[in-house]
Length: 336
Image (cartoon, rainbow, N blue to C red):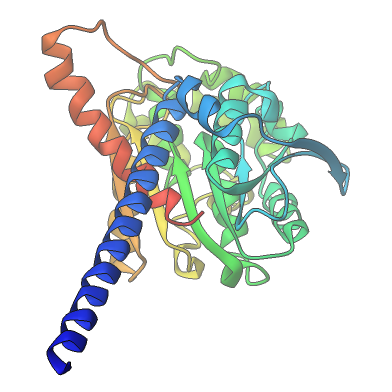
């Protein structure tokens, strides 16, 4: 009788172990599929995730004069605020809509505000207050994702004492660490193939200086031909201009950041060099922050770039980059 009972208990334990392993396997497979399908959608192939998850509820609100699109609802387990870059389409960028939709399908309630000044390529420290206010509207701990030059004010908001303890993570794509270095590349590097030309930036930011002398010095700065020339002219800028630019540099307020950093950058970014994210990651780690940096060949600045498909590109481009992108998406999904 005692042997029969022991045998029964052993069978029950084996059954429980088998069930637990089956549940774990199902959860693992579901996570693997979600990460894979979301990565495909972020890279521009939405069909698989859309077929699995279906349409996402979408609504628009206005807060403090800022239009905000919200994907999903507050029943979703996690929330995410997306800060667009300085571009004329703002929250209505087709790439951004696809990204927000995919993140909502993966379990985030996604807030995408539209910043009017940033749509005009006008970047000011005051934008961080708008970002902070939008974050507070969410009403719970949330992540922040940002793109390109939008990452400066987004990082400033994330470092704000009023919300920094409630920022779960920061995803920065194609951002910068030191705006002086980013502008040096913009001014003295190759002409970018997108709408971030140096003269467009200068024209859109007439308030960089308060008087004619300051404006003349800024015009000379933007006419610099070499990095050395740029640095010499930068040091001659009015103090108020240098202070304004410093207020837009994550390097200035790195010590106030608390959230883990997920830094992603196009390896051959023609607008903001990938060295900016590498430098950011190195400095963040030195300060004790949880940080990672991933460089991708499949992106130029913030838009996908894909070569023709053949055996060579499969081995040298698609497979290595797919692995790197999946690693980033897996970490991101871990917060959902």
